[in-house]
Length: 343
Image (cartoon, rainbow, N blue to C red; front, top):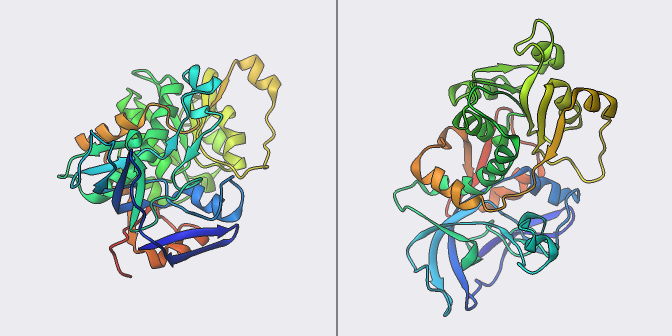
């Protein structure tokens, strides 16, 4: 089979490798679609820890081709989405219920071979069934949506809340929809790209703001801004130092900031603790998808969250290394890899 492998930091190529066989509790899944994530770019450049050589791809779905002898809940022919984050269930964090902070955490597509391939092995406990009536591409959104759900859970959005979303990538776009689903009546997306601002407003944002048009803090939380005094909740989805630094300034007194975006390992941001203290702004971080993948799969299956408008282009495996090595094209939200596609 073909697989796109990170051989070492900076070395990412498509190779022909042996098709794996499922172990007793594993599924062999024919990959239909896998999403390119910003984390994949961090992995390529060595700014997010991983374990090369490894096949990348942690956002994927596909059809079960074969199952191990101990598998009882799945059979060949069904469609599944894989939760890539495997916790041990034994360490202190797992016993506390903080499975996303597992001391022995392993991730498909980061520590073990992932979905940028014709086939991927998935432990049965990490698989969630999807309807065959879905378009194949839709299942690839379950993992990023699950991470967004964790952030929304932490944010404490209520009916009537105001929310600012920083970043117009796929995480920001999904958060816009989830914030409205949670009851927010004002949701403002901040991004420089006009096509992303238009897309956000078409999928649920009540307004958008272009940082190139003026000071973000003044334009949103200033006296004459879109949300004078600031937002109840600010969710940082860009993973950029500038937006992380702006996030607390956009929150109202007593507001909440949730950092979802992944900044490169080692980068720092200056924040004024005095301001946070005297305005009692909560700054939280949301990591991975503890117990949210099944909810994400259900939202995708029900059509509650619209993902089709977020698909910018579809590529085959051979085009993948170039797509990961370069920044997204202007206006792109999500690029999907479809191993069966030739381009």
